Image 1 (cartoon, helix red, strand yellow):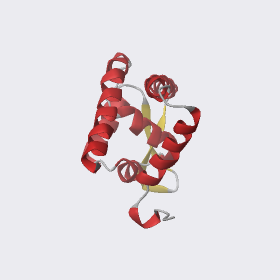
Image 2 (cartoon, rainbow, N blue to C red):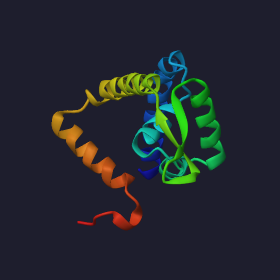
Image 3 (tube, rainbow, N blue to C red):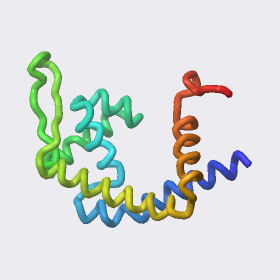
Image 4 (tube, rainbow, N blue to C red):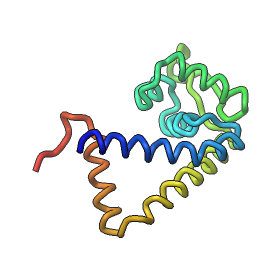
Length: 140
């Protein structure tokens, strides 16, 4: 059963990625770019994006350079610590993030329509529990 769960999670993730990738490419984004844009929207600092996304710092740096060259993010010195850079979404970056979110949510929604409202609620609750770190998992 456990291997079947992993297989189905992988298939769901892969299916969503395959469906959404052409839309992201039309927006000039790689598959992980919306997640980085969302982290920059929330946190502004590359180190926080690295921690949240669990992607190596050099990879995030390269992604940010590409997004900056595309005009989707801007880099500035942190006014409280001039040794640090902070990033912010440009107006174009915000628009691209919203559009990519819309495509991703529509793809997921099409799959969730297969579930009843009660099943959707249970699935959301269970997925949240499974996604938590081990130490914080409630046991009933």
